[in-house]
Length: 160
Image 1 (cartoon, rainbow, N blue to C red):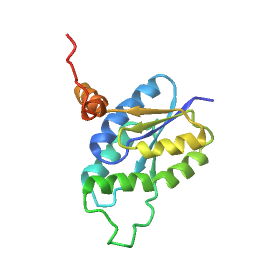
Image 2 (image 1 turned 90 degrees about the horizontal axis):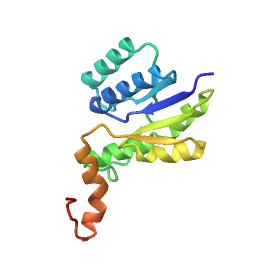
Image 3 (image 1 turned 180 degrees about the horizontal axis):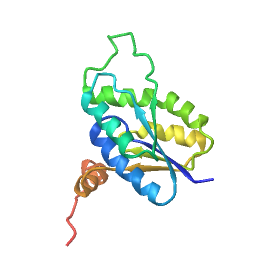
């Protein structure tokens, strides 16, 4: 049986397209690949067409769309900040992601988008190794990794 990896790109075309490129690399190395998608809560022709293109051009990659849990009916507690909304949506997808992963015959690894940090809890529950995929520039990654040190007030010296 082939080793199997599940890729979870989170939301947005900018995260899906690079993750599909990673899926192609895994295929070249003989792994079975499933890309798990979140159904956008708003109609997005860009996202829908990107998914359709990815499916059509990569028939060896399985694509699965997770069902979106019902929205919180209490509008008083709903965040207005779009970034907070995205992180809440991603966290709310943990239960459907867990159910889907349990339904698969085997999963050997889970690759998460950089914003899908809450899905690490799902991987831990299933005792799956988890890897993060960062689809931005290396300079951004260096900044984000050093940000806690910089914010803590320590002197940051540039290497010579």
